[in-house]
Image (tube, rainbow, N blue to C red; front, side):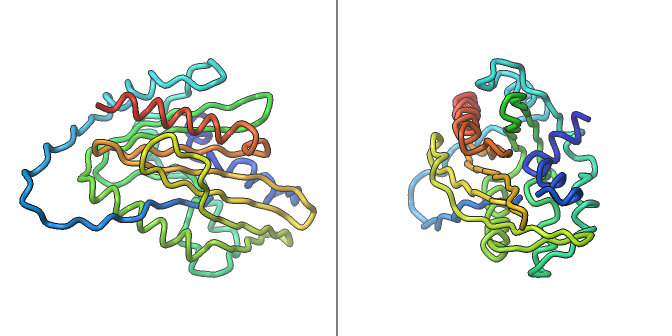
Length: 240
């Protein structure tokens, strides 16, 4: 159950809407051009092990005051059930099928990673923070940029299954900016009946560590954004 909740953050309510008719996306940071200079080569960023990342995530405290539910690299690397679910949908434009999990947690090959999630029982909002290390900074940037191209191309999607359909719209979002260089996206999911939910995803790289945060649920506008911002800020402060 823990693994499913962590991997499907940003998708849980979305799945319920799809299957019952009651009715993410990934973000990107812009790739900065680098000019050759005569300055000394900067010191390589620390490469964190999986265990070290788990220990960092354990130090992050959500606004609820509870402990985060931790997922290790091994748990996150297991097959994401959202992929199987997404294969059941008819998605337009068809090329957007490649988004696979629409906000589910994905690991990068060769990386080290750890995540922590919190579910606010009162609001139903799920927030998650993920730390990824073990790769060259440019590889981290390239992976986000690739996701950004997909997010732009698939900013408007329609998903349908079993006679039900929903609209998914993604746009850049400026409300999560506590960590310098953060780029965030807002994804709104809605059905013809008027039911809807919102998912926010934010990304930043600090000292060679990719920090990502997600907030998802019907009440994400009210407190999910603030919680995600706080989780990112805490994570950045721990990375030296």
